[in-house]
Every structure is written in structure tokens, then in C-alpha cells.
Amino acid sequence: MSSGLPLIVTRPEPGNSATIARAMTLGFDAHAMPLFAARALPWTAPAPQDFDAMLLTSAQTVRLAGPQLARLAVLPVFAVGGATADAAQEVGLTVVRTGKANAQSLLDAMTSENIARILWLCGRDRSDFDPRGAALEPLTCYAVDPVAPSPDWQKFIAAPAVLLAHSARAAQRIADLVGPQRAHLALVAISPAVAAGAGKGWGELAAAAAPTDASMLALAYALCHKGEK
Image (cartoon, rainbow, N blue to C red; front, side):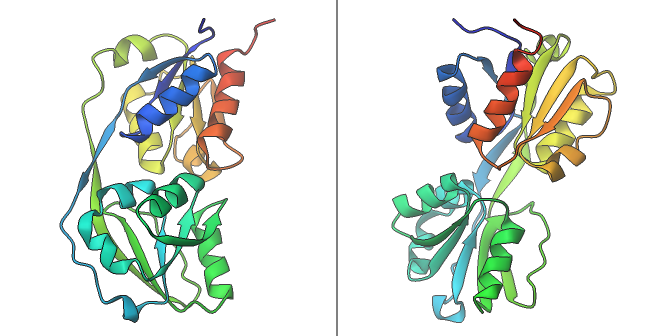
């Protein structure tokens, strides 16, 4: 039987369902409340010979890129996170390295190997990275747009609960929707940078040691059961 504080998962689908499924197997009282929805955007694949490698920072890229992605299958792929790498391999891309930390660390590794021309297939709203002298070309193929919170949102945030923020945009939107009265809530962020964007005033604010669901859920479990004996 589930126990502890409610866990609120705010990421867009299909990631939301995946996180909920993992949480339920661990005994969480987990609730899917996506605050964003992803959608494909039109794009045209460039000539693959103009690049040395492709950078993928989200599994959403692979899911929403569509048939154009097949034109780039000859490029070696550097993927951030296991979920992104798995999605890329499932559609026939060749993943040569999976970054365990973040995109900047993976970019640093790429440039240290003299990979000079990098195609970054990405979302419309993205972070800025230092390409360390390489030619990094972002190409947008999807967007993630805000959606109205669940009708149960206000009920759940009015009482103690633990929320997950899988991105900087999610942390900011959660903070905006919750408002300043948040001392009864805990927020688990996917990274220290995401946690920093969530603002102050939380009852608990924790950053995952690694940008994975497993790391986030381990923190969330401790917070959901804090004070229990």
C-alpha cells in the first residue's frame, strides 16, 4: 500500500507516465499533474556530411523528430542521459557516448576529442551552452508548451506534498503556480541549476546527484517519509 506524502509529477508525457510507473513500484502515493505538453514542429534535416556528430539532450527529440531523423542516421550520436540514448538506439541511431551528468559536460568531452562540427537537434526552449570553440548548430524540431494544471492541483499543493521538477522551466512554473506560501511543500529538482531556479521559501529543496528519475525518486522517497519511524 502507498504511504507517505503525495508525490506530484509535473513533467510532460510520455515521461510523466514513466515516472509515475517507477514511483508506484516504489510505493509512492504518486499523482500525474503535467504542467507542459510536447508537440512536433516542422523541420528539415541538413546534409549529414556537414557535421561530425549529433548531440541529443532529450528523449523528446527522438520521439517527435519524425521521418526526417532517418536522414541523419549516419552521424554518431552523443546523448545526455540513458533515456535519451535508449530512445535514439530504438530508432536505429548509433550512440557512441552517453553523458551521465549534463549537456555541458558532454560537449566538453566532445570538443576534447576534436569534434568540431556538432548538430544539436533540440527543442524550441533550450539552455545555452559553451561550445568551447566548436561549431554547435541548434536545430529545433519540437516545442514544449504550458498547459493548465490538473483540477486537483490546488487541493494537493494546499497540503504537504513533494513535487518533482525535471527542468528549469518546470521549476519556475511550479514556483509561480504555488506562490510564496510554500513552506509546507518539498521540491526535488533534477539538478542543482534547476533547484536554484525554484526560488526560496520551500520547506525542503533538494537537487538530484544525477539527472535521472532514480536519483530524483530516491530523494523524494526520503522526503515523503521524513519523520516516520
